[in-house]
Length: 345
Image (tube, rainbow, N blue to C red; front, side):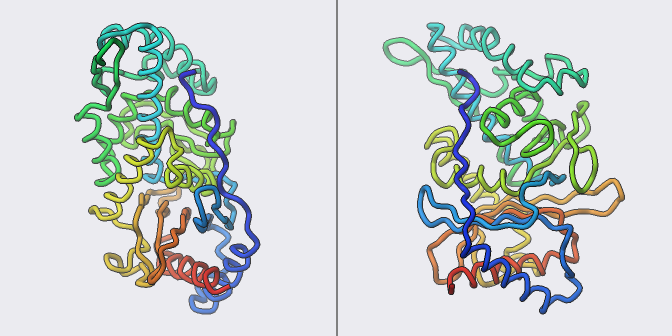
């Protein structure tokens, strides 16, 4: 089956983490009076206690918000998922080269991608914009004894790196056009990361406006084309850390891409070594940040990161969104205090 089976929901509600977050909220309100009751901020934070043990707490974590460039994390997930599908379909069809592999993919994968998310077709998006452009994404390698191996080609690999590490809207748009709206959102829905009609991770726009978009309803900005819940994005990260997103090789590659993004030119808002809004009490090892304007003209900030507290080896997944610029230092403080309360509890 080209689309994946649902990935496990690895994040589990944890009373210790919930108590740590509650105490940290009190600390934050005390230290930053203007932070208020933060009704506008959504947050997920999870302690990684083992490969199947992700202890979660959050604020408004099940509701879908516009989250700007954080959604670029979807691109490598969908690309690696498609790589597996093309390889499986090509080998099942007896393909020995790119032409026959891609012909098989168009026969099997294209109809599924074009019908996976009815809302996309209902919005008038032509099939050509819903299905992948395989030749632009992959390199086909014949294997000894027959069959094929499928790799992401160097050109698409460069585009993915630019989309995440540099947060290039142009590169992200090209990746999205090559993958196709139907494949992207079909893979998200099949993987359990999006529940129609509006809850979860949704990416059905090109960031640069070069193609029509298909929106879903968000809490903070009405109809938007790039949206997520903090819970679903944090769960995607948990599957990366566990090695279960697509497969262990793809998870490792995505893990490294997020690490490279953390050390690239668009660092975490919580990185105290590179941002005056950050904290010096932990290291940000993986990240993807987002900032974009609401329809009101006011910008919102978001990020999905992995942090390691000073003096510890334990990882924490942190995903927050819908913060304003004046909230950034407060968000770093809130995360810092939540982690410390959890570790000391």
